[in-house]
Image (tube, rainbow over all chains, first blue to last red; front, side, top):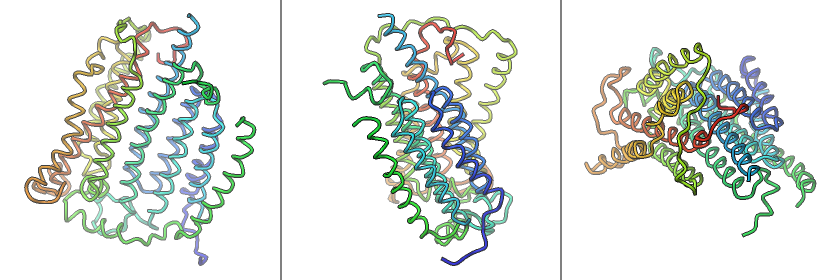
Length: 91
Length: 114
Length: 249
């Protein structure tokens, strides 16, 4: 393992650091509704990382999925759980 | 410093697994699983990066200029689609479990009989 | 085992996993020091060989086309699984009640404009997928999102056609099956499965790539309809009257 000059540009280091910071934030948010929002922000930080790593196709995929697909299924699941709770409490 | 990207991927994987194991809510568990899956995207794209390489799209740039690896980007695309499918299925299972067992807590599901 | 015991076992296990991971990645080449031959080979040969300027899409739909076929069917299987799991036992109570309309006219106006914009952006992303960054999957999800926006700014009635399984199921089959059909057509003409049979066209325009264009549109259709079906299953909760703290409106 030779010692190389670092090939990590400062922009990439910042993008990696933001992603490394965002992951524990998503896990530590316990309420699912808030976690859906934090997950969206984590998705945007992942998109920034992918763009900085010269990967536009995965960046577009991640952007589209974390802005449209994830919030929809998560929020719909939360709403359905609440509806089922309400129905159970009524019985 | 050159190994920071791989360390970040390992950190995200471990954090996501911690979230999955200590979760009190099945929906929270599904989202922590997506965090673990995102560690695989970071690792794949870090392995494929070429120093001073551009994006592997050659419209407007000269073909033959240095570009990053396109194979890992194709793998990451498939990975993102699989992640959506997995989250949708896990949430459907969570809804079903909640309807049958009355609780969304993974620890509470152990008491379901038959 | 109880929660405390579980966490007490988890932390050393995760530390061990982290150590193994660190040992594994220490053997990788340093970041940026790419050694494998496939990246260099593909970047040089895909453009002259397939006339697509987006090498990632050329790889996804041609060089590694079988993987993408598997991905289409993963999405298809997920939709089937979700439909089966969320099937209502009392399936006759499909009463359509009016959702509360959005009160703000400004929001509705912006939403309606965004539906049109979203449809155009989705179609553009899907169409030019093999020329510039984009592709069938990205464009498909944007299209599904734009159609869902129709539900958000409109009402059940406007959106009803996109929740109708009888309309969506054949389209899903067309998308996923169309992919396999293109591969089988290659097989029927004596060449291996998923060979690029159609004419290759001019690099950098829409008319390039041969069967990559057809597979791109098949996957866009499959992904759009799969997303709409998923949304339809998860949205069945909104058939009951909404209340004050509903996160959906």
